[in-house]
Image (cartoon, rainbow, N blue to C red; front, side, top):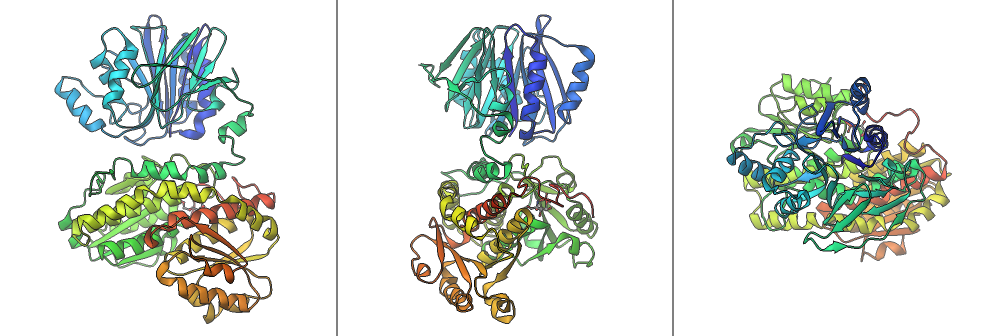
Length: 609
Ligand code: AGP
């Protein structure tokens, strides 16, 4: 998730762009750049690092022009570097492109263009756009872009300028947001409203597969087949901070609602509808190498550790390889039995968590192969690993991790299915069945997100509670641990999660009249068992909030409150079951007036021991 901006008018575009990029830096901040039409040609200034690095350079040289596009990056393809920063250009440097999204078939197009003599300067998928537009250019920039979008696959919003036609910006959007800001004798484009709010509140929201040609006094929209498109003006009445949160009250709530797209993006290019294989180009593990591993460790901290618990279940269940899950701060000091026959899977959103990084190095020094699941491209953990499978959740701003958790679970499904494919422990049909159901998960999660009323009711009634317990069995126990952590870290309510079968061995002593218990009962095999566990705590006076799959009506007769999630297979349920738990923690924290995005005593990336 990058941020792109553009301006055409009579003002100096550079300060307009820099101001817009500052408002979009929450979308990505590992490198930034601008392309400005100045002194008769397109001039590129782009640097690795925060926007302030670019700003320092621009302040020194006073670059000025009336036509420009800019970009702040969240790396997906190619580590943060000056060369991989946007804008990307063709060889002559007279066509410049900024892009937000992923060009899935960029490797195929790159090979084609190289065969036509084009020379590439970066590892980034976006660069193919600049060369491909050059390849199709015959005097009409919009026409060249139209030809390019017919051949590229993926999700994208990109903008192009060229000094061959220095009176316009051409931009397109498919799946990723792009808006056009309407000015007096000037116009703007941006990935999101905050970037242009200072200048105008009149906007056009670009639709799916639309192309726009923008000059300083005219804006025209076309469908992908070139037909003109008439659009309504969208008047924005949000303030800037609300706009940065996309109209949501907190980044956490925004990120909870971004999960359907984040999961879809994390499957893009790896799981295609019509294929029965999982393509994980980033993992160079062969079947022979996999056979050699006697054991797998999954090592992580906090929420990532909880994703690892689901990963253990998946890899053992699908690929039949024994897995041990370890808390990184324990793993690094307990002299674990790790050697060259060990595969260690490291999970980290930030890729910078010190405990996890140190555990990685400990395992690597012992000869282990390191496969990491990371969200931040080019982070320390990513750079230190043999193989990296990126989650494409985009920047996660709120301290409480939500979309990183569900995309980590998706990445672990992909790894488990890939291993099962390499080992032949699953048939192609079985892999296809699971894959097809995974491709439907975004829709199921969208449905679960629609179920807020029950949760808000529960939160307003119980936000005064001192203790809240979560119980579950199997995968539900792993998800219960995550639900309990979310509640603790943002609402400061004491909470524990127990394997429901373990209650009678002690913790049930904590249950008394009115004790709040959240019971997860989505595992079909274990449903009957969970019913008796719910009866157990009810018998001691507990107030039970049950989360079950649609159609399981019995629990309603026992629990005080029941919330249903859409039907999904047991193994795939964690990414859906966690949604009401994230919302529960959120609404409890809001009820208590807590600082949801910046909870006390916590940091987004824990880089101390
Ligand atoms: C989760 O909400 C917390 N922010 C924390 O537990 C976090 O998961 C942990 O610090 C690991 O962070 P990482 O994924 O960036 O390594």
